[in-house]
Amino acid sequence: MKSPAPALLLLVLAVSVFNGAVFAAEPINGFRGLRWGDPVSSIPNARKTQSLAIGEHCYERPDDTLTMGKATLSDIRYCFYKNRFSSLIITFPSERDGDAIRLALIEAYGVPSQPHPDLKHHYRWRTSKAEAILEYRLEGGAFIANSEALLRERKNEIKSSAKNHSPDR
Image (cartoon, rainbow, N blue to C red; front, side, top):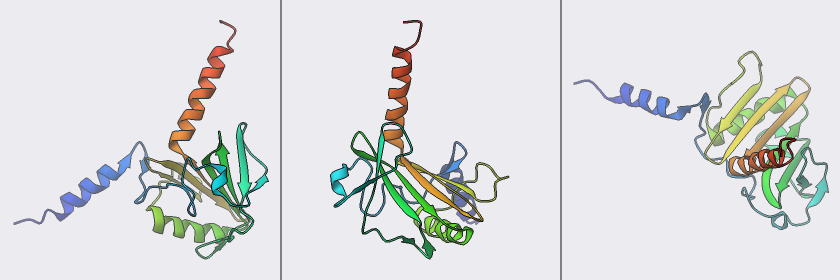
């Protein structure tokens, strides 16, 4: 009698691949105790820092540990849209740190997809709760994660606003 293991493995792999992205083993549901949707007040002593997107406010934790696995981090920004944790931006100074972060993320969230195979260090994780991208070069890079629900809400508001301000109205 044949073992069902190869067929089962193929089924698991097929189910884990969707829309060109490999879904993470664990949902990306925030970072270091902060969950998507949590208010700014969830960060004690939050210090406002530069925001990268309109309508978003980013903060740093003054006492944050600037390491992830064996990587040294340059910066961790917790960004909020309508006072809800919506994005995480982590920067780091070197390719070696990027490699270490990639290994830590694979351990936590599973094997990423590489939507642009021509780019050496460009990785993507998708879960039902978040989408995350890690990209780096010799001189460093960034890991950016976004709440799927808040990103969708934001896109819908931008579409609605554009529609309300169109010259046809």
